[in-house]
Image (cartoon, rainbow, N blue to C red; front, side, top):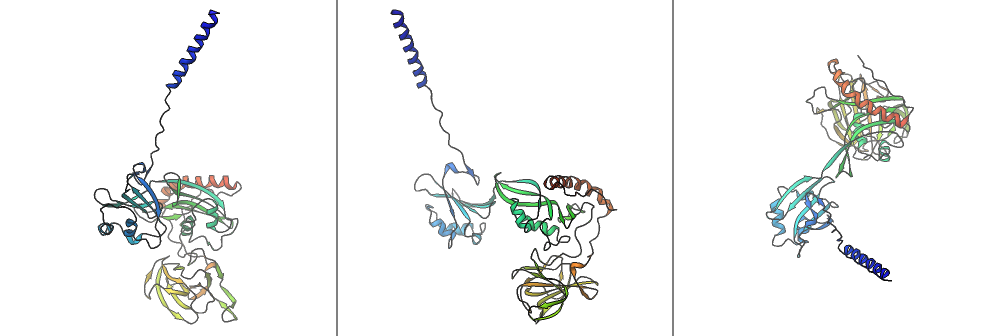
Length: 419
């Protein structure tokens, strides 16, 4: 019996000791997560997020928030030379950092002019303002796809900013008629994308290299500077042939052909059959019209049939004309460069809707530009080809490998050099 009672005492003492030990365990304190944005530690402030509303003026925005003894209009006067307050746009976000203690005085005002750039007005101590950018990471990406719908729609489906379509259109402006791309055409492209704070997609930074396959023909595009100090980059195919030709494929970007060059066409205004010696590109009113080649403006004016028009003489062989403009932006005798905007799409003259009628002369005769084999620019000098090939080879390998995986049965053009 004594032994049993002694055992119970020992067990009781052990349990009591364990409870005391447990009572000594201290839970670790939860640390406050530190949040840093725009170079400020949010934990130090009372943070308010807002957007610019219709009718908001900077002074009135400040009046809505406690500035203490600071006069809002004195602030406007002090920062007007470094912060263009007229550029504040409705819908853009603003961040207000206030003191944590009442009356929660406004200490910092942050205006986001876009997803990357922002302007700060700091009211602590002396009032100061400055511009800055969010940290941006540039990531290289290569993908290959088949055209379904428009080029922009295809890019959007691939999760790429449709603005890349503009880059591709510029590079292939001389070699691919984007009015004629169709379902089943293929392309691959290497480009750089921007990400804010590593995660927020901020669009395309720049395009590097690509190929486009149209009607079974692959056209590669690789950037190269013959003059390494030049700012402008030209594009060449895998054989070092320049993509640039004397003429652009079209005077507009993207928009559809509504009527082709024809020896006999029913005129929708005159209601009669007659020759149509031009190519009509339908586009919204005001769309910029570009001269397809460099030259001198030979004539501008207005006629009942042509409406507002511009004619450009390129050399002794070629001239082009652009009809039905809503606005002429050049003058007779002016020198214009290829791709320069010379007018805006309209429907002046004999036109049923907004479009540009593009006319093309060769040796004084109007011809169909889409059927012409147009002259190229000067070829790359042989002495630069080895450097080009060494730069081009890894770009092409990457495009081809991604395309092979994407299409499997796609015909990959082999490397060769045109002498």
